[in-house]
Amino acid sequence: MFRYLTAGESHGPALVGILDGLPAHLRLDVTRLNETLARRQGGYGRGARMNIERDEVELLAGVRGSETLGSPIAVLVRNRDYERNRHLMDPLAGTGPALTNPRPGHADYAGALKYRHRDLRNVLERASARETAMRVCLAAICAEFLGALGITTRSCVTRIGAVAAEVGAQWEQDDVEASDVRCPDARSAEAMIAAIDAARAAGDTLGGTFTVSVDGLPAGIGSNRQPNQRLDGVIAGALMGMQTVKAVEIGLGSDVASLPGSQAHDRFALGEDASRVVRPSNRAGGIEGGMSNGEAIVVRVSVKPIPTLMKAAPSVNLHERSAAPATVVRSDVCVVPAAAIVGEAMVRLALTAPVLEKYGGDSMEETLDNMRRSVEAARALFE
Image 1: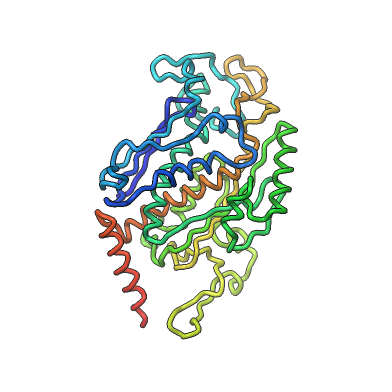
Image 2: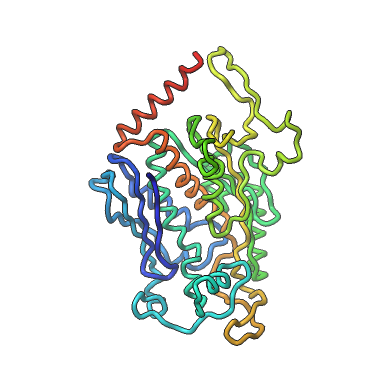
C-alpha cells in the first residue's frame, strides 16, 4: 500500500516526509528533485521568504546509490529561516508573545478552537503553505516513478485575478517555464503581472486558476467498485487538500451543467485503419465512470487570494475581546504560479497509489513487466 506523511512547521528546524510503498530499483535524480523544489519557490508575486530559503532535499532512508531499496523513503528539507526564529520555534525552548488576532480566511481561529491553543502561532505554523515544499519534494520522487512508466504531468496558470488567458489543451511547456507567472500566453502574462503589482500597491492579494494535465496514463486506472476508489474523487480530494484551493473541475467541469448530453460527452470513432478506437474530443477530461479512459487527464483548479493582507483586514483580539486588525505576517501577494507547481505535485501523489494498485510489484522490473502485460492484454481484447 502506498502512503505518505509530512511533518514540520513553517519556521521550525525542517520539513520531513516519508514515502512508503514505492518499488525497489527506482533510480532518483536529486538534481531534478531540487529543480522541482526551486520551481515551487518561484513565480511573480512571491514574498521575501523565498529570498531566504534555498530548498534542497536530503535523502535520509530508503535510498542507496541513488536507487530506492523498496523500504520507506525518508527525506528532509531544512528551513533556513529557522535561525532567525529559533527563540520562537525551538522545539524545547521556543516561546514569545502570543498571536491573538485571527486572519479571516486562515486556519487561525478554527484551529485555536479545535486544539485549544491560546497562541495562534501554534496553528498558523503548521497551516502555512510552507508545508507544501515537502509535498512537492515527495511528489517529485513519485514523478520519477510515474515517468519510468511513461506517465507525465505538466501545469500552467490560466487566470490571475480578473485576467484570464485563453490556453488550449496543447500549450508549450517551454513557454510556461519562461513566464514569471507560468502562463504560456505572453500577452495575458503581462496583464497578470500588472494586476499583481496593483494588488501589492493596495496591500491586497490575488487568487486565480491553474490547469494540470496528465499524459500517458493508460485506461483503467481507478475503479468504479467503491466511491473512494473513483479516480476523479481521488484527484479532486488531493487537490482540495491544498491550503488555498476552493474548487476543482475535471474536463468541462461546471460548464457541462449548461450543455445537452449530445454536446457534453466524447463520442467514439474508429481510427483511419479501423484498428483502434479514437475520441475526437476530451470533454470528460480523461476520466469516465471513475476510471481513466486513455485520454489526457485535464484538471482545472481555482485558488483563493491568500488571507494575509498587508493592509490588515478587520478582526478581533481574542484575549482582550476587542476589535483589532488581523495579524500581519510576512507573506505573498499572489501564489497562483507556485500553487500550479503544488497542484501538479498533488496530482502526482494522487496517481501513484492507483497506478501501483494496478501494476505494482516489489521492484521496478516487476512493475514495468506487469504494466506491459496489462496494456498488451487490453489492446488485444477487441482484436
